[in-house]
Amino acid sequence: MKKDSKYYLDLIDQIETIRGKNNNNWMDLLRLAFVHAPREAAGIVSEIYKYDQKISILAKKLTD
Image (cartoon, rainbow, N blue to C red; front, side, top):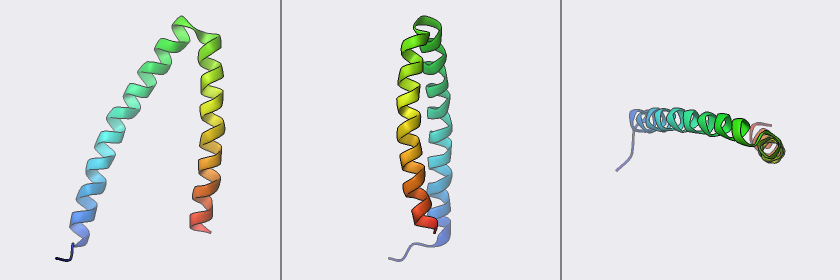
């Protein structure tokens, strides 16, 4: 059975909704971390940023 574009677009919409909710959870977690342990939280966010940069470089290669 071949899936049509509506099937894929529906899945993408579902992923978008879930990611949006999860992004809110991430922001709540960041707020909590910076209130209770700002120095430690900054170190962790710095590490996350480094990995995000690596992911962005790899993702860019997909579009070149």
